[in-house]
Image 1 (tube, rainbow, N blue to C red):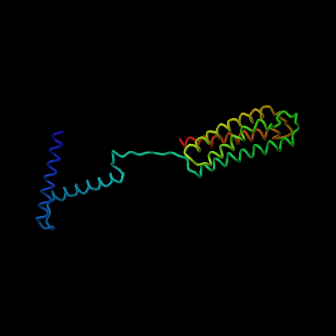
Image 2: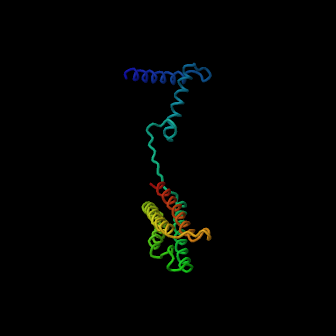
Image 3: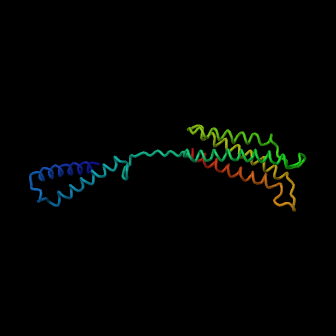
Length: 195
């Protein structure tokens, strides 16, 4: 430790001698030692400037990474939630008019209302675009998608297969379960970026 202080003191004295000798001598005649020390001094100034700007070499620099979802991405996820809610409602109303009421895979409005309500609620909350609302809306969207997947997979399993009518009545619950699964992944990815 003492050696380091002695080296620094020696360097300071040399710098003082160089500056005093360079001011007294002509500009064309400079010793090699003084040019080396002056270039070291200039390099130190550049490093100091780099440290002030927060570039390479700054050991005391702290970096705060804020991983939040972009507003346009959040809006896209919210719109996809709303689209899934509209498709669910439309499919339910369409197939209720088309299928017999005693059909095993008959869509039930009371079964999809919580899922549709959750997706519309997620759309509204995500669209608020604030630090608390967006993650809460994404979680609500995930839960609604999980509920819809459960309802549609139950309906898919309950629907009888017909070999002559391909894809048959299983296409609606199967397609909606797949759509809900993909939307769950979208909401989950948005939430993971938000936290």
